Image (cartoon, rainbow, N blue to C red; front, side, top):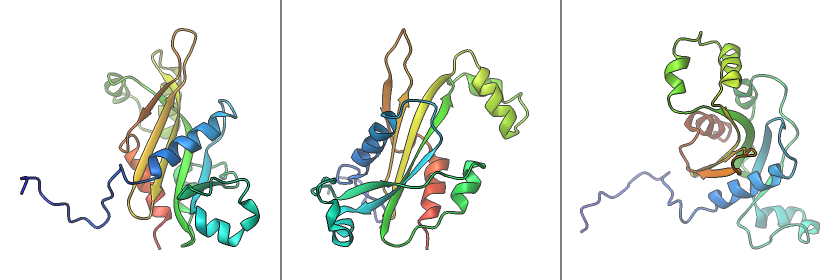
Length: 185
């Protein structure tokens, strides 16, 4: 025995075995081909084998060896993202989903500055957008029904620095929780 407690959570998934991080990167790469200043985009994550069984004519367009395939969805309604997500329910054939959205990232010290700002969403957005140390970014959050989570953040570069990529499943816990709720029966 190694002294490490066994994880008895049935929803826990070894990230090294999950296809989700590579799918999140694939979604970010796809969205990045459209450049910046895009609205949020939703993707259904479906099992490639099931998709090909239903639509064999797609075999030439898909990586048939991939476990999952992201499928772009219709644009989200132009309303609060939380409200839009609360209205989504995926059928069982959808193994997971991913959302790509552009955000503003502030440095760690900026949180204290925001404490003095009225906590209304629009006011916070305006203050963040005007902050001198803000960075624009694209966040892709992806979840699977089995509890897997992956996030990819592309920090927009400028003339002084290139784009930066950050990957970590806990980059956007509120967003991944909201996405997970769309998969609940």
